Structures are given as structure tokens and as C-alpha cells.
Amino acid sequence: MTTTSSRLRTLGLGFALILFWAPSSVEATSITIQNVTVTSTVGADTRTWCMIGCVFNFGAGNLWAAFANTVVNSPSAGGTQALVLTQNPTANVPGFNFDTSEHSFSNGTADSCGRIGGLAPSCLIELNILTNIGNVVVPLPLNNALNNSNIDPGGSNHNEASNWNTSVLNQPGGLHVWVGYADNAHTGGCADLTGTIMGNCLPDNPWQGSPNTIFAGSSTGDATECAIENIASCFDAGAIRIELNDPTTAAVPEPASMMLLATGLAGLMARRRSRLRKARGTPATPNGDAGGCRTTRRRCPTTRASGA
Picture 1 (cartoon, helix red, strand yellow):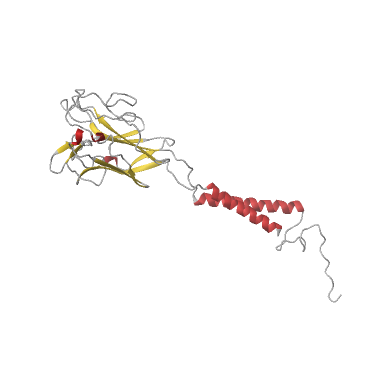
Picture 2 (cartoon, rainbow, N blue to C red):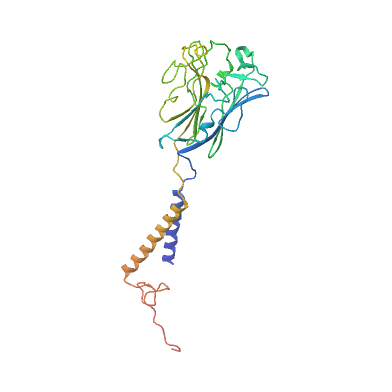
């Protein structure tokens, strides 16, 4: 009875070790960005930018098709650690094609988001990121860097630049997302007063040319449109930065690993029983007796003859 109880306790300990060894959640050290969708809505009018699944619609469309299924790694994994999306002129959607602070309507007109004094309606911006483990709805505030906080007065002077300031999404072990605005096109004083390079009118670190960064975008325009610096091409566009935080828990072991652990525990128990038998110096029989009776310090009882 004692031997049976000991074996049961050992087996229970083994299964408990397996259960405690497996953490309750799984987090990735890399993630695949399958699609990013940005919508700007004013009343019933909506324009959409995306990687895939949308078409040209009054200055918007599938700007980043070449960057669908980009893999982003967490810092501990190394490699690509940031994906930056901004204006990206294409044959179907040319020019300043991610000007999120201005809404182009289906009737061909356009107006600045929430023009100062409420002279134009606010632009409602929504951001969705589809990954290999599910869709993430990024909780953007009504007034944010993409729509210039709905106070854009319009014109060629007002500068809309905004660095990567406070992130709009920061999931422990999940996505980390910022929005900003690149504007080295307008003639007014640069509104970008923070960041690694203050006053460059661009979100920086990461940006174009930064290490471990995939930059989905390109400058455009000419010396007339890029009046702030009188350069050949420039940006007047919203910007999105996507990264992945390090996991907060270890990965769940595979079933094969759990089976290996259980097999090892069973082997240890068998070895322990074998050592105990050798230490007692008695061979084991199928019913657990030694020499026909149980191995105890008490003498085996004498069998009386029948009829005695």
C-alpha cells in the first residue's frame, strides 16, 4: 500500500510540473502585417487608403500594396523592428496621396479637416491593422496628428508637422503604434518641435533610412509645391509607425516536449524502484513478494498442515 501511494504521489508531481511549466498565454516575437486600412469620413463621405483591398477613390487607394505581409520583429528578436507608412506615389494614386488633414469629396471638392472656427466638418480617422493573428482596431482620438487635430486653416502657409509623440496603442507583448505628420512643404514655421531632430518637419527615428526600419513611402512634388525649403520633392502626409513589443511570457511548450518530460519522469521512477530492490537484496516477484512473502522485517507466517 505504501509503495502504491508513493508511486501515485510521484506521478502526480510529474503532471503538476508539466502543467506549471506551461504558461497560460502565447505571445509572438514576430508578426506579419497583412494589411493596413485608414479611412477618413466626413458625414456620409469616406475615402480609404490601404495595402490591399481598396481602389482609387479621389486621391486615396491602395498605396502600400508592395508592403503587404511585412514581418515585424520584437526588439529581442532583432531584424526589422518598425514599419512606417506615409505618402507613396503610385501610377494609380500619384502625388501627395496621403494628405490625411484634407478631405477630398466624391463631388471633386476638397476642404481642410475642421477648418479653424468650425468652417469645415471634422474628419473622423479610423485605423485598422490586420495581422497573422487577428485584426487590431487602433483607438485613435477624434483629434490627432493625422487630421491635424481638426484645426487646419488651409492655405500654403500653415505647417502640420508632428513627431512620433505619445503612442496611440501600446499592447504588452503586442503591437505598439504611433501616428505623426510629415510636412516640409508649407512655408510656415515648422510645427515639429520634438524628436531626435527637432525642427526637421518630419517624424524621425524611425523614418526613411533609419536602421531596422521598412519605410513605405516617398517624397514627391516640385520646387513650387515644396516651398518651405525650395527642394525638389517633399512630404505633406500623415504617417503611421508600427512596432511589436517583446513578449511578456515564455512560449507554451509543444506537445512533443511535454511528452518527453513525462517519459523522463517515468524513467526516473523506474530507476528509483530498481535501486530500492537492489538495496534490499531481494528479487521482485509479480505480486510484489520476495521469495513468496512480502519483504518486511516480520517473519513469514508458517503454513499449517491441513486438518492440524
